[in-house]
Amino acid sequence: MKEPLFVAFSTQKGGTGKTTLTVLVASYLHYVKGYNVAVLDCDFPQFSIKDMRERDLKSIEQNEHFKALAYEQFKHLGKKAYPILESRPEQAIENAGRFIKTGMPLDFIFFDLPGTVNNSGVINTIATMDYIFCPIVADRVVMESSLRFAVIVNDHLISTGKSNIKGLHLLWNMVDGREKTDLYHVYEKVVGELGISILKTFLPDSKRFRREVAEDGTKAMFRSTLFPPDKTLAKGSNIDRLTDELLTILK
Image 1: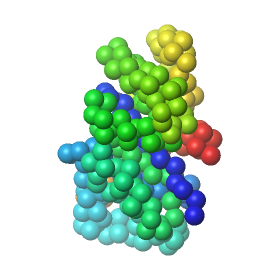
Image 2: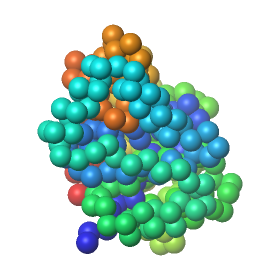
Image 3: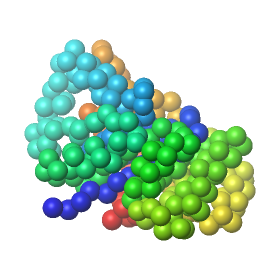
Image 4: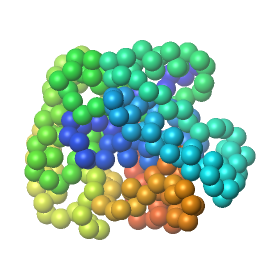
């Protein structure tokens, strides 16, 4: 049986969108691209993704439109929603291994990790990832924190061979406007000098990334653990381009 890849959108700075990215990419790969995905919610104690799944399920139970949509999706895909497991970060790898042994076919396991590298358990979990994608935002405080995280991972784990990490990539998120400005190019030059790569795809700053399933079913959804982003809302979001670029790396 093929071993799944361990992937994390991780950084030590909050507010960069790592949880949203985890959900969007996991849902797009599972429901649109046909891959088999699982998510390990390690962001103790809030477990944001697990809570999102519960909200999604509640919305479906109360809305006939979403019930029909879920049924049609199941008929088309022939598989259920991807599993979401809760875990403390220091126990994540053990719990992932136990889940893999159940025999469920898996291509990727996404880990939503807490924003700290001061915990040895978190560091050990990060070191076990196959790939890490670090979301960055063009804000000085955020950039300094994110770059410190990336440098620590690169210099102390990847370069020393003390980890399983095959790739570390930064990802521009919440980009203001349709294109990156000169400020982004300045930051990219600094990152390049550190020997760290940045994905070509960037995600725009848009309220659509926070739109979940509405209980009354009146609004199209974008961020959901049970459905992919609405096709209309997905236009211009770059989520399709992002997943295609990620697959070129993960394959």
